Amino acid sequence: MSRPTLLVFISCNFVHIPYFATNAPINFFLFTIASAVRKTFPKVLRLDGTELPPPITFDLDTELKLPESQGSYFMNDDIKNLVVAFIKDYFTVYDSDRRRDLMQAYHENAQFSISCSRNPMFEKQVGFHSYVDGSRNLKRVGHLDPGKLSKKIHTGNLHVIAFLEKMPLTTHDVHSFKVDVTLALPTLLSFVVHGVFKETDARSDKLIRAFSRSFITVPSGSGMVIINDMFTLTNAGYELTKNAFKTGAPTPSPSPVSAAAGSGSPATSSASPYLTPAQIQMVEKFTSDSGMNKEFSFKCLQENEWNYEKAGQTFTALHSQGKIPPQAFVKDAA
Image 1: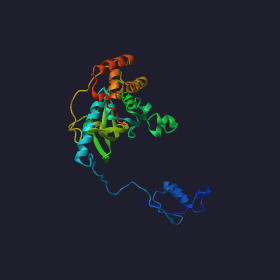
Image 2 (image 1 turned 45 degrees about the vertical axis):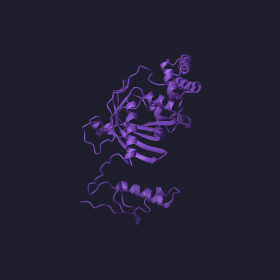
Image 3 (image 1 turned 90 degrees about the horizontal axis):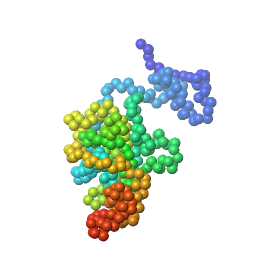
Image 4 (image 1 turned 135 degrees about the horizontal axis):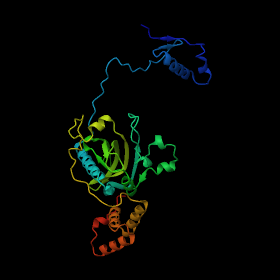
């Protein structure tokens, strides 16, 4: 049986000379030479009489037991009830074909960004063609100039909703949700939702995706609105895919959302699947001209088939008759 190599002397050896051909510090030489020597003698402990740091090895003598996966974290029950109700309502609408109804969930100056990346577990996998144009994965688009990168951050609730409606239709598995509250203040609440969803529209192959949504919210009325939404996604791994949409599957910690999730069928609509830049401008102009907030301005334009003049006439007639509700003139959150 061969004994491990513990001592190596290479001083004045031709292997040693190239490492002294630069002006690098002496500990850089030691580190570089030691790394080269350990490729051949992985267990060397002393080099030219100098003791080396212990080699990094992975042949562990004992089996390493990782800590069990922990459940969601909410700080207290009041925060849990608030966040769970918000998540339930948000994803119920998001999974319908009326994501435009989420406009009130976002602050007027909210920001949204998305980053997608392939799962390193798989050599071959379906890409993110429906998302890649908007992805802000800096490992992929970091070479772009700052101006182009800034365009991948969607600012304003109208622009956020317009982008959300361009993405594939989805169904989220609420039983897979894990929620971590990261900061809770009277003026700000941030939390992260982890889980899986499947793409359900004709453009996709009903893929199972793994996602994280990082929400930062502020109080608004009796609830809260989103001021920042960071969406990251990848392809789900084997275990997530295997257990997805199996409500009876055992999990280390049950989802806090699954118990609260309701069953209602999504609303349907034959309207345009997303807002065009021209429509966004129309909403902003109609909001300014009519004095209504963006939600009611949007509804008025949509119900009048995006005919600005017709929408204006309808507004004038209804307003003169006192048929427009007071909440239409409640200004959007500043």
